[in-house]
Amino acid sequence: MRSGRTTGFLMASILAGIIQVVIVSVFYAGGNVRGQTEVGRADVPEYGQQSSKKIRFFHDPKPQPDVPREARHAGTVPLERNQPKENKFNITFRAAQDHKNYGALRNVIHGPITAIRIRYFDSEAFDRARAESFLKTVIESERGDTYTHIFWAEPLGVPVIEGYLYSEDFYPALPGYLLVWPGRAVYRDPHGKWWFTSMPLMGGKK
Image 1: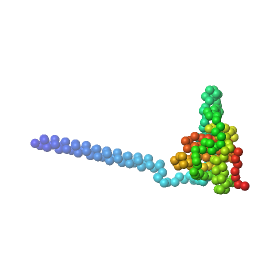
Image 2: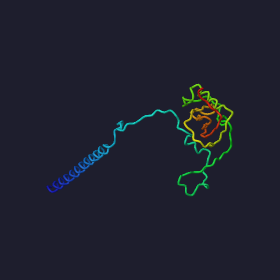
Image 3: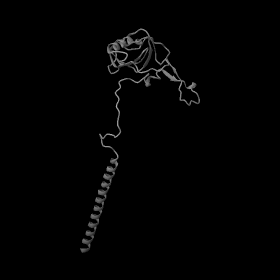
Image 4: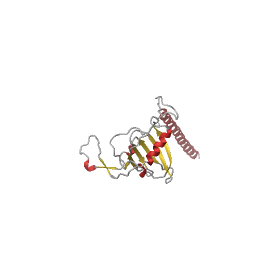
């Protein structure tokens, strides 16, 4: 009987030791994870913490100069057969697909236009009333040449007017987008197609 009790006591002691080892191991493992987490977070700034570097803010409502970047290759395709074999200047030659002259800008504007949202106008060239009058003339004029690609060589500066054209034929979330320079205009219709216009128009303060 004593032998059986001794064996049982030994087994219980061994089992208790195993359980203790497991508990201690888990405790220290958890402590290491927490320690690593705290160390890892030491180099990460807390949410809302400001950088020591001073930030400069600029408030400039003007659109970017020249034709929008996403419109510069509109209506053209690259001429692969005419690309030089060694082109160290990374120049790509492109050709227009559609050479048709669509006439005045009004011919490609989906209308009738019911509202115009002017986002910017050059205050040195226009006051508000003249900007509205000039833009109305631009979209209603029967004069001008319009193509699906850029057909002038000179770069353009900052547009004198930037605006959105709203038509009852399209959902208000799909307005046309218009940029105007003296004698030039770039229009993106509600379908996303770009149009480029040259027109003998000039406006501004008198």
